[in-house]
Length: 152
Length: 152
View 1 (cartoon, rainbow over the protein chains, first blue to last red):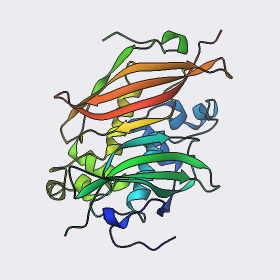
View 2: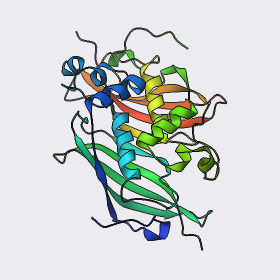
View 3: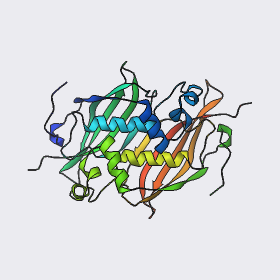
């Protein structure tokens, strides 16, 4: 794990560069509260209903998991000078995040495409994996980010 | 807009079938509160900082926008008997959602793939667009969902 404090510009990045995040503990109360607001389905709201569902126990909404991953990314090593500006990407939830899970995110730069029309910026593709305490992936994000060059 | 009350099973679906949602108003206070918890970047937290950023005004976190879309999907016409169970998909944010925006989601079934190994279920691909009050897309989601057949 490389120490990273200075914000990153496009020219600081290379393919294969890796970054990690701090950790976050998923709590049952927050799982239910998030779900009540944004994803009100029984398996995210209530232990008994969740036990009877395909999840076989309370599971965080995938969008709660995604939001936690964003928090870990934004507060982790991978800090861009212009912020973490996502244009879009691909997501997957190989398994649910559960109450008590301690999660962290590992990221790798997989593509860097300087803009032809806007020479001061480019698109950087970052592949991130959120892992639980036993090293199982609970969330995959491949994001396209807008990253600027260092001002000259 | 077709009235839809009965939950949907795999055999109720066909390609090209469309569904709509209710609406949701984005509020500045909730935008900032969500960002403070999950996406603490200046352009989601503070009007002045947002004005000076690429967004030129307060913008909702893309993950807040995604979470609101999920709320609209889960509470809209497209209700599956086994719930809205996403395996993953593709996302994009063509423009930010702003305070005061009234958002709704329009969805279309674009692919149906019955499982070979598990004959009681299949994967359904749903393309959803979240639009603001002037009809501009603020969020695109193409999601792969697990949908079960009607029990026999």
